[in-house]
Image 1 (cartoon, rainbow over the protein chains, first blue to last red):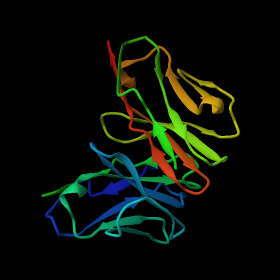
Image 2 (image 1 turned 90 degrees about the vertical axis):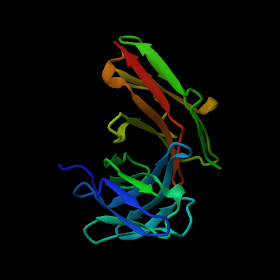
Image 3 (image 1 turned 180 degrees about the vertical axis):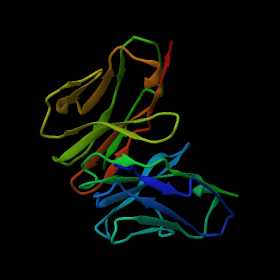
Image 4 (image 1 turned 120 degrees about the horizontal axis):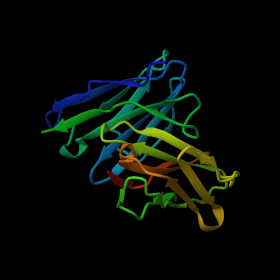
Length: 113
Length: 113
């Protein structure tokens, strides 16, 4: 089985712009979750989608949003980028959700200048 | 509120030594799940083990073993006979049935030949 894929792998944006990241889960997995990893805050949970519905959400501002399509692929959008949004964004998929093992993608490294 | 504490920031060992990683958690929920994930230098998190709050049985899987004790809210992880490939950051993770998801700060393991 192919693993979780994320595109793009690297991205450079300017403060104030918006960005969309994409994640393709393992075939058959209906749960997709997103995480932000920074040196200062560590790994933080953003949100989880299951069958096109947001099921769980972390403590991030509304600038961070996502969606999931009928084929379980997911996108994450960050609007009005701030310097502090520079991070590694990880996507993970699971067959059943957050209570089960997550399979992570390689991440998208976002740099905001 | 949930909290996961990994007090060890970095552990350095020589190959073939055993490594024990400590994890202490806090939650008010009676149903919760604990995980260990590994993040090698490549950046992709890899699932290692999962335990639910109703199963305190400790097991060994290859060179990995874990010690789950609800009485002390600890979920420690041991690598036996460490190898250079074990060098990575190890994260303890807590999630509950309500979808709250919390990573520990991580412990960097450095195994030298």
